[in-house]
Length: 286
Figure 1: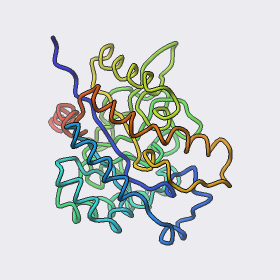
Figure 2: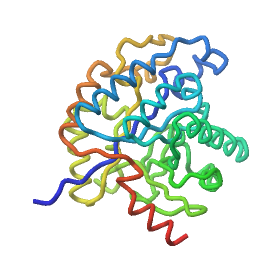
Figure 3: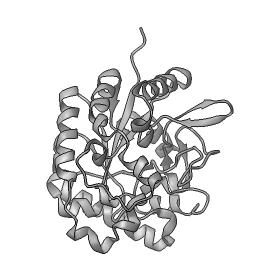
């Protein structure tokens, strides 16, 4: 039998009040006074991954790293990949090129200083690299990252580049973009990489999508999750729209169990190792 494909497990390390959809209710000026829940949620995720023998990549906010350096050190000490989610969870498409560059450079330097490891990967908040900011990849390369995982080749009301490549590809400055996993059906790309879809749809749909991608495309999949998605006890923002509340709170009580099942059903590793051959190939070309 063929050896199972090792997929890439990724966690976007941010707290519930930093989610883009809730930004109108949590201006940055309020963050310091808002009780954080990220530390306890990260401890649960790291313990679950250790129990299941899974490794992964943690795209971590600089803002979180500054205030919870022990979280960063736990990630590195456990042998996971420490990567960057920028500093203040501001969408790349909402920033100027120079402002974006300074944000991601600051985050990289902070994470490396605290974690004591090199940071080579970056993921934009809300997958906000797309048609409106083609300059973003150049900034990411300039800041010293080797790869980005900031493009989702789907159609969505908040993000997405439906006609982007579905597999790792070279962009500006020798950078490699590693897009979030999709499967092709009925002439379009369908998201199977996690996030809200993992909570909204039955677990069997996510498992089918990853298995289909591994089989049909013979490529490793990327799965992503946020620490707040395993936290059904987080405060509910009742002022948010019904659509936002549904997307944010649906099935929070089921996510940790589903994640445990996902770690059982598939093999998981770090982005920099799962896609190591692609990164080395581009490095040689560049």
